[in-house]
Amino acid sequence: MRVIIEDSPAAACVKAACIIGEQLQRKPASVLGLATGGSPVGVYDELTRLHNCGELDFSKVITFNLDEYVGLGPDHSQSYRFFMRTHLFDHVNLPQGSTHVPDGRSLDFDSYCESYESKIREHGGIDLQLLGIGTDGHIAFNEPGSSLGSRTRLKTLTSETIRDNARFFGSEDAVPRLAVTMGVGTILESRCCLLIAYGEHKASAIAKAVEGPVTAQVTASALQLHRDVIVVLDQAAATQLNRQAYYREVEDAQSLLESGQLGKLGIGDE
Ligand code: F6R
Image (cartoon, rainbow, N blue to C red; front, top):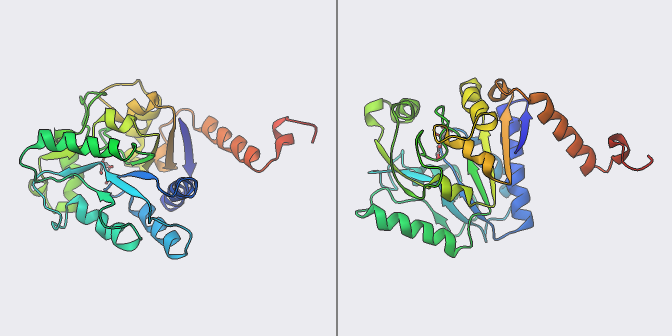
């Protein structure tokens, strides 16, 4: 796991957008997995800015979102389809039909969820999956206790998630109780995972996910089993990490390598 600690949430968003941008430069027809909620908003703003400057082209990109509330249609102001339109889809050149957000109004969720998984496979799998983390350690809506091998399915939200998300709905009672969500197993099949978190309220979940045991009680900890995970944090979200100093040393060494300053790493005879 690569852990990048930035000075502020704004700097973390720019860093995450830069990582996504590099993915699109390497592979213009990338399949991106996308997240909603407060955390990715600044990332989408930065991606939009880069697109407006002519630095990012989404014309060949395919997207799959992690989740959707059950019962909300695409025009509901709190649906994740609506969120994605507002924060990204309407601002970049993603062709119609290239974006996928689970449908929260299916009448047959079992076959719908299977077809969502099939579509991901038909597009060759997800190249880079953007993730936020819940205060209970969830990724997507894989609440504590979710199988680490789980696939796209219906999930009941915990009272903690309902409380956290009430800020978007005005009251806890208005938050849907169920969501369609990619499973932990689905997420782990992405070629790269990019987890972002800001603020002290995420510090405990981040410490458990990054340095705690791998457990279904903190589904983000399953990312420790993945070979290519980048975690981008602000300082507040990093406060409970024991190995902060080491993560910073790794990043310093990485930038010396990238800028060719090999002598400073004791390589060669500079
Ligand atoms: C949303 C999602 C959730 C959020 C998480 C954090 O698509 O998958 O896992 O990433 O609940 O939400 P925020 O960013 O609002 O704190």
